[in-house]
Length: 140
Image 1 (spheres, rainbow, N blue to C red):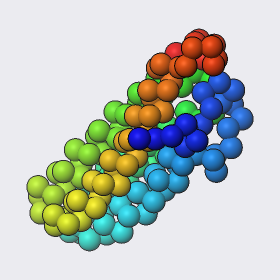
Image 2 (image 1 turned 135 degrees about the vertical axis):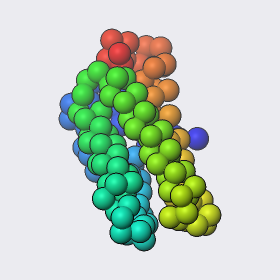
Image 3 (image 1 turned 60 degrees about the vertical axis):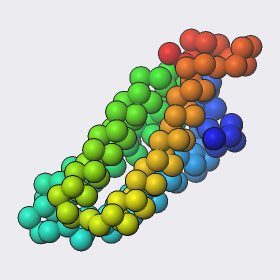
Image 4 (image 1 turned 30 degrees about the horizontal axis):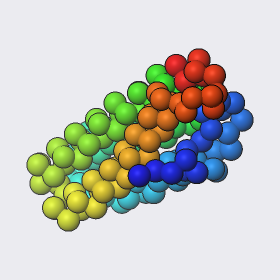
């Protein structure tokens, strides 16, 4: 489970320090691992599937920063959830096509699952804020 200390504040999110976002740190680690892994893809796939993976990760990082800066976060967090699911599909496709072995798939999937747990906790906090903690309009 993700503790409240790992999540950025929901209200007043305009001034959240980006270095306090642990999900951003995990995404950067995932991006680094992914970059190393896609370099092992066949040359013909480095500009197709590998590029899709890199673009999806860049989008996830962009949406994380956007969510931290926005007052209304729910839609952006839902977009992040969609991108994360798309990344899972691309990684599964990489394994099914034989570009990565089962061990790399497992490690890569664990990185993605960790980000997914953090994102899920953030989404849950935004959807169901604690009563009296903040204005409910800040989470829609």
